[in-house]
Image (cartoon, rainbow, N blue to C red; front, side, top):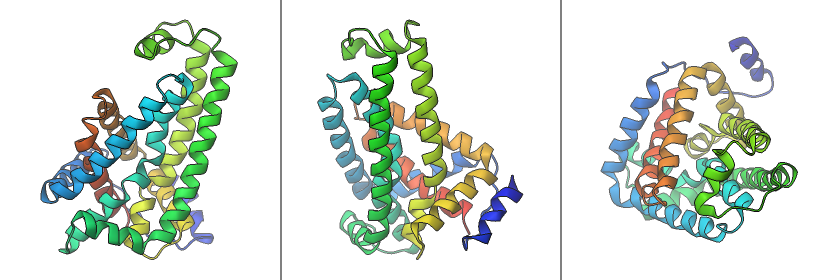
Amino acid sequence: MAKSYNTLDRHFNLPHVRQVEASRPLQWLRMGWDDMRANMGASLSYGLIFAVLGYLILAYATGMPYLFTAAISGFFLVGPLAAAGLYEISRRHERGEAAGFIDSLKGLRQHGDHLLYYGAFLAFVLLGWERLSAILFALFYHGVPPDMANFFQDVFLSGNYVHFVVSYLVVGGALAGLVFALSVVSVPMLMDRSSDMVTAMMTSARAVGFNLGAMAVWAALIVALIGLGFATMMIGMVVLLPLVGHATWHAYKDLVE
């Protein structure tokens, strides 16, 4: 595995990637919590903004099951970019600089070009997933769309739509895994150093390849925490999104020299 990822150096000038223990993500969460406590106002501001936006999107998609599920899963795809302001807060806090909400916006402007390109990439992926989600519904789901209050029970847990559920999870999981591998440290890297998007994405892929155990734990923690945010009607997202965002910064600093 290491040898195959080392071949990336033939085409990209990649930074060295460290290997960490599988339990290391728990430490990232602890450090992320420390960052959030030290910058509570700015951190919760981002959490509140994205919780409100997420709630409005889900409310709009309530009557459209394929769009509702795509919106929830799509949140995980765009999450790395949505947390860019939180990475900037952690970066400034680490350097002893002012790390308020307005200060983080200034940092975002400084890296606007790179973030714009990365945002375009994620938007393309998100639109592709929305179309794939609609196609899967059209191919495998032939019943009358259930009320959203019972949607997951009727579709995912009843056993009546096994082919749909398997197809949805396989296609969505494969896409999410690819985006996770290319994104897990790429946006923090763009915020921290003068790097192009492709180099940052290849570094992220290498970090995942060298740390499959830790990355599997980290992915599971992200899904669990953000899923809890959705389960609380986005209220928990006010705290959980900043926690994951700050922790992701420390994941980047831990993995990439």
